[in-house]
Image 1 (cartoon, one colour):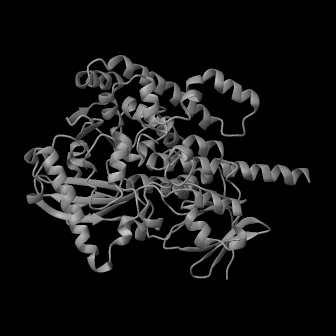
Image 2 (cartoon, rainbow, N blue to C red; image 1 turned 90 degrees about the vertical axis):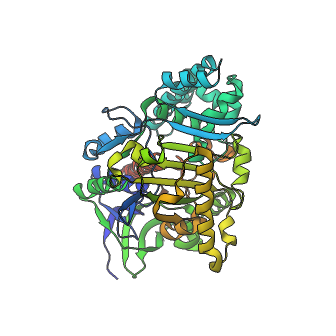
Image 3 (spheres, helix red, strand yellow; image 1 turned 60 degrees about the vertical axis):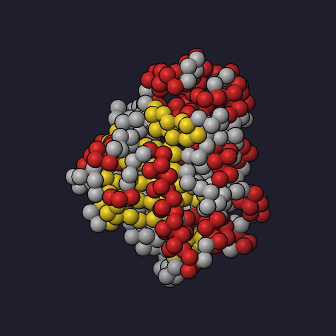
Length: 522
């Protein structure tokens, strides 16, 4: 077996792993990124069926702006030098919500970008909501400022620093333990306005009775304020740009390379063994995959601390994903499609909708995107790309037999298409030229995530972003090994995965610096 030593090995070329490797390489470290597929990106990739190119999962990026230095993601991409290497398309509106209200009314609202416009639109739909919504977005600005402070001060905080945080960001501290609905109630946001404001919960996979207010408002505040964007050439453009940063800074990427074992020496991660038997040594490892997979399949039993096993077993898997990708042989104008993003649910009560998502038979909720509304040239003239995403909050697809699998895929597509047509009054089934259905089984096979989970561990009340942040260093009980991606502190989504990669890289660079200081003292 051959050996070659690296400062850092990154396992998995999803957005988190790509970002971690890019930052580490840019900082001058000897980096190797290992990916079992033949291209980078993970969920941030695309595929072609007939004359249509479909994005696997990316609907929009928030915390990004076309203006340099504005938005956390833009600042991050500016640092890596890729902001202007990617062609961006802006999303025209926040969302359209079609649902059923708590009092039986049909909800059908379209919400714009821009805080003032959003608040004014809400006032039209829900009179007397303006004052409370204004307070809500003001609070959002304060919490966003606090989270940016945390991101810029990721070292261990002294008591003096904690006192500073509590004084300057008092409302951040006050709201941190509470759910979305608890804070909205405290702010006296009208129930009808809450139903609309909470529409975006499906992209986090946790109902608003348990979803962390800090997490939700941080995302929605920047989303409404800055707008949203997608790479014009699909999310693969982002993946390739990040891969380019790695290679431009003397990092290495090996595709079609499957890591079968993480090695430990004297209690510290020291390398990997590939499926072909090759051994590669290193000083640190960043894994862009689930701790469940790593601890159960990639490490020897004696190398996994009992605390890591207990912590991982205590957590709950987040939502499993399924998508129906449609290539239609009519234009959006001919079909009557006018909106980019549709949230279509059976009820605006997010906890009730979450419960309906436990079963295949009771779930027709969807986040559906028509890419052509933002990017008319994304498909041939006179055609439309429509992507329907739904979530399952339990492992219900495990009950499907191999013999019944393809029939169940067809039923899934039929249910979501019918739901869209009934909700919008738009006929699409007659104009399907290409259709592809991805189930949790598909995602489990392609991304190697347990049960096809697309949202990491469930970010509910006890395991939300604040508790994870507070215990982040305590959770690093496998020396030399850190994690990034949707299973970590930042939770799920492309934005979070990219941020987690940055954080994992900087934390690992800090580990390396500490080790060198200790060696110099000896």
